[in-house]
Length: 196
Image 1 (cartoon, rainbow, N blue to C red):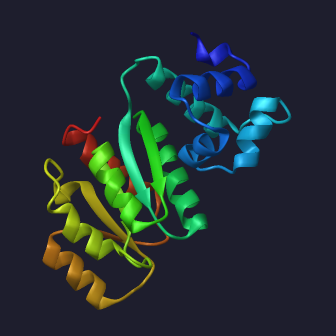
Image 2: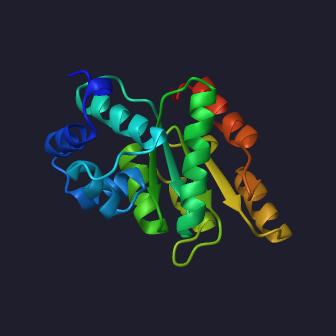
């Protein structure tokens, strides 16, 4: 199936059918609203180019094409989640790397996603309710086949205690707002480790 030429309603319906996803589940996977996926599938609107690329990548993956580098982004703030996801996608495009980005807004769900997806890299917010980024990092140490090189903590808090805690765990720490250069560096390092 040539996804590049497929009209958006057929592409979305094909993805949902192949992956057995509801519109809501596909929206969550893409990091958009349910109403957005509904409008695409009904032909009432068309996706932005970056969303169209993500749909095409997902269709290629479902068709058996090799997946791109898996990146998990974890942040309890919806705006930050969207911004960081977009930075990862833009950095991947600038580096000519195919990236498959999954987002989670909760530490416990992120821990499950880490075990299930085994991402090449996970960008994890430090300050979250419930299971925060540092506690998540401690639990990741117990995951078989996942190294701390794959985990990058992200924080808006300019707190020396956070830096010290990250250093004590041997984890990279980036301060928000992230830059395209920083995210690109993280992706390059993951690609060198064999994540792409």
